[in-house]
Each structure stands twice: as C-alpha cells, then as structure tokens.
Amino acid sequence: MTVAQERSPGPAALVRRGRFRPGDAVLYVVTAAAAFTGIALLVLISDEVLREAWPAMQKFGLHFLTTQAWGDNNKTLFGAKSFIYGTIVTSFGALLLATPISLAIALFLSELAPRWIRAFVAPLIELLAAIPSVVLGLWGILVLGPFITGTLGPAIHGSLGWLPIFASKPTVGSNMFAAILILTIMMVPIVSSICRELFVGVPSELKDGALALGATRWEVVRGVVFPYARAGIAAALILGLGRALGEAIAVTQVIGNNVAIHADLFKPGDTLASRIAGQYQGADTALQVASLVYLAVILLVFSLIANLAAQLIVRRVAGRHQIR
Amino acid sequence: MSAQVPTSDLFRSEHLRRRTIVNKTIELLATVAALAAVAVLIIVVGSVVRRGWGALNLDFFTQNQTIYSGFGPRPASGVANAIVGTLIIIGIAIVMALPVGVATAIYLNELAPRKLAGVLTLAFDVLNGIPAIVLGIFVFVFVVVGHGQAAWKASFALAILMVPLIARSTQEVLALVPISMREASLALGAAKWRTTISVVLPQAVGGIVTGATLATARAAGETAPLLFTSALYSADTMTYDPRQPLASIPMFIFTSAEQADPVLHEQAWGAAAVLIGIILIASLIARGFADRSVRRLKGER
Image 1 (cartoon, rainbow over the protein chains, first blue to last red):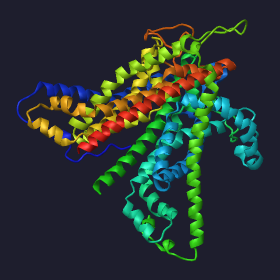
Image 2: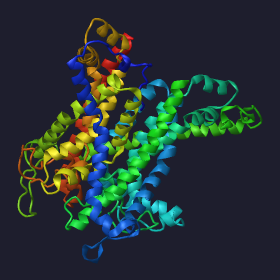
Image 3: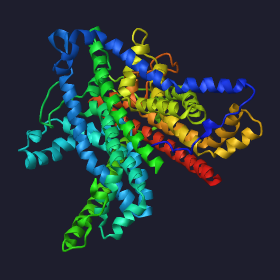
Image 4: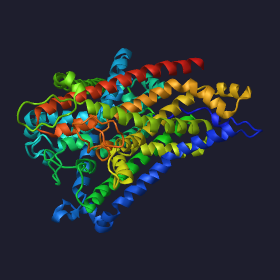
C-alpha cells in the first residue's frame, strides 16, 4: 500500500543545466497543476460543504450533535445524536468482528497456506472487496435480512439473550446487527490484504531465530510477527474503520433508517452516511438541506481524522523501514 | 515490547503439550477464517447469479425500464438505458480523471522535490479516504443546487474518487522504470519533457492501463456519488445527453431493491450480475496487463 521507495536521489534529481527549454516548463506547470488538485479539492470540498451547512450550524450549533430528531416540530428541528450513535455502534461493532477474522486470514495466507492455496485464495478474498456496496446491500435486504429474522437472530437471542445488545428477537430483517455484518464483510478484505503484506514483510531472520529457539508457529506470530507489524496493523484497522464510517449505500439498505437509540442490535437504527443517502429523493426545506450537509460535515471530520491518523502511522513505519 | 527478545516462554518445558495444542487451535481458526471469507464470497456471488439468471433475457438488455401500474399484462422491460447511462457516466469520468491522475503521478515521481511530493501524496491519500457519499454531497452543493442534476456531474464526483487511485498506481509503475533509462535519454541530449513522454511513459503504459481499469471498475459500482447528481432520471426513456440525469445500473439496483415487487427484485439481481460481471472482466484484464508490464519492468533491471 505504500509507494515503492525509489533509491535516492530519484528521478527528480536528474536536472539538465544550461539552456532554457520551453517544453520542460510546460511539463512542469501542467503536471504541477494536476498534482495540486488533491490539496485544492480538499480545501474546496471543506469550504463548499461548510458553507452549505452554515444555516443549520448557525441555528443548531453544537446542540445538533446532542439532539435526537430529524424533521420534528414541523420540519424545524434536526439533530445528529442517533446517527452518531448508530455510526459508532455499527462501525466499531464491525471492527470488533473484522479484526480477529482479518488477522487470522492474513496469518493463514502469509504463514500457513501452501503456495498453490495462497495463489488461489488471496485473489478470491480481494474479489470480495470488489463487490459493489449496492450489490452487498441488495443481498443484505433480500437474503441476509430474512436469514437474521428466521434463523440467526432467534438462535443468538436464545443463547445470548441475557446481553442487552441481543435483548429482543429481531422482527424485521433491517436492523443494526445486519448493518454490522455487512460492514464486517466490507472491512475484512481491506484489512486482511494490508495485513498480509505486512506479515510477508517481516524479515525471515527474525522468524527463523524464534523458530530455532523452539517457539511454535503461534508463538512466533505473537512474539515476532505481531510486534513487528504492530503499527501497520493499527493503520490498517483505522483505514478499515474509516471505510465503515463512511459506507452509505449498503448500510442504508439494511439498517432500517430509524431515528432512535437502542442498545438492542436487533432494532433498526441509522448512521450519518446512511441518513444522507436515504434523503436523496429531495429535502423539502432549505433548513433540511443544510442539516443534511451538516451531517456530511460531521462525517467529513470523522473520516479526515481517521485517514490522517492512518496515513501518518503508515508514513512513520515506511520511514523506519527505509532506514533499515 | 520485550516480546522480540525470546524469554522463558520460548523455553522447552513441560508446557510443550499445552503450547502445541494452543498452536494447533490457532492454526485451525486461521484456516477456518480464510474458508469463511471464501464461503461468503461464494454465497453472495451465488445468490446474485442464481436469482438474477432468470432476468437475463434479450428484453433485459434491449428494453428500457417500464413503469408498471400493477394492472393488466406487464410490458417487457429491461435495463438498456441504465447500461447506456452507466457507460456514459463512467466514460466521462475516465476522460476527467485519467489525465489528471497520470499528470499528478509524473509530477510526484519525476519532478517534485521529495518533501513537497510527500505532502501532495498525503493530500491524495486523505482525499482517497473521503466517503463517496460526502463527495456526492460536495458535487451536489457545488454544481447541482440551483442548476439541477446531470450525468456529467455524477462523472465529476466519480472522477474525484478515481484520481487518487490512478495517481497512486501510476506512481508505483513509474517508480519501477529504471533510472538508467532516464539517464541514457538525458545523456543523448533529450530534454526532460522528451525523456518523460517518449522514454518513461511508454515503459509504464501497461501499469497505467491496469491502474485506470481497476479505478474504473471501482467507480462503476459506486452508487453514493450518483444519489444527488444523477438520480432524478426518467426511468422509461433512453437518453444519451450527459447534461441530463441518466439512469445507471447501481441506481437501478438501489431503487429496485426498495420496491416490494418480486419482478423488480429479479431484475435487480440480474443487474447486479451484469455489474459484477463487468467488474470481474475489468479486473481480469487489468491483472493480465499488470503481470505483463511489471514482469517486463522487473526483468529489465
């Protein structure tokens, strides 16, 4: 996932001195303009979104974050509290499920599987990441939903019903639990493929050393592989979390779009991204549009923090490895 | 962490049996996890193919969607306009994103001072992490509010999503082009721009095509950027004008899934099968290109 580090000083250092060449100037200006679109777009996106959300920000202020409402009091009261709750519950729930599964898959592919199985399984898991979210959502409504209400939900409620998160039997297939499962399916391929690369990158002298000392494979993983890849794993998990926070389509299809806060995962809820997606057929009032964009502002802040954190970790790790 | 230094828990002891059991258990769990992921893939793709198969007839590809009142015989309907719409939207997105992405990569890899390149790359990585729905909202407030939806605005949102992907993959290929080739070209008296365009880019073209194809495959399945930019289309007419909102396969799946009509559900599954098929074929082509060009670049080292 990091760019192959070229040997210093790199192609940029190859400079011809002497006469001025117009072609070089053109190449320089054109490509530099393109390269600055990244920063320009970040600024433009933040600016436009903030500007459009401004009426709602002015009206509700930070109370928006602690108000549980959407279009109450004759479409004058909007708030994000239940959506923030839903976003946190579903994405961290998915993270909780996806972390052990992804690490296990990465370990299987990097340490256990014979070469031919690896060549066969790794692309399949990457293919899972290529399934469009709208297709996963369709599957979520029409296949997973009925399976949860019919089989999985009652079984979990029967055995773990004493936990408040499984307090009721699911009555509709659209609920937060379905959203967590769908998000887990989306996170696992992302996190596991990054982790696999990290694990393959662990120097074999370190692993061989531990093996020579009599460690079992798991002890090598726990004592050498995990500590070595620790920072990278954290970055991969944050990237996966960022993806889950921002997933709109598949979540809006399966979560039930309900403005409510329940500890019970078998009840419908909603997330920030999903609420935005659910309003696509048009908001009625200017205030509703502004509130909708306010949700996008919160989501933007969440995703900027998550991605910046992950990228900074990745860069620190990459820098360390370059020195080695 | 002290764990990198082998301590007494690596010592061969009477706990060996327990350690072996723990090890075997973990190995088993890891294998099961990998199998589970493959099983989920098979279940999802299997559902799509099994349920969508019946919808894939000639009408499906040649007719537009029809608005069915629920009475009388059902008119033939399909997703022809959605397929055309998706091709137009994606086509415009490629035209917007490819030059910017490739030019960005050239600047970052060939021209920029290293510190500046680091900052600019970080900006693209962060841009890459912005949720698609936020990009959709951005395009909505930027060019849709007050002007109306249009297919090219959807393309614009998708292009923002594609540029970081294309830039990143192009950068990786450019970094593989041996520096000696640039040196040889410059030593022969070629200017930097001539070297870049006639020596470096031709070497990297396979990898660029791969990256662009994968980015396109990713964008083709995105629904969120279309919601606020090209969703209010007329479902039953074929339109080619990108200045109007156009139907698309993802939007068709999204809206049909919300209906209670089993025929629409079957068509949604059919459309999902078409979408997965397109993405799969694109990925396979990309993989072929990637293998060839990267092997050649590595072989020349």
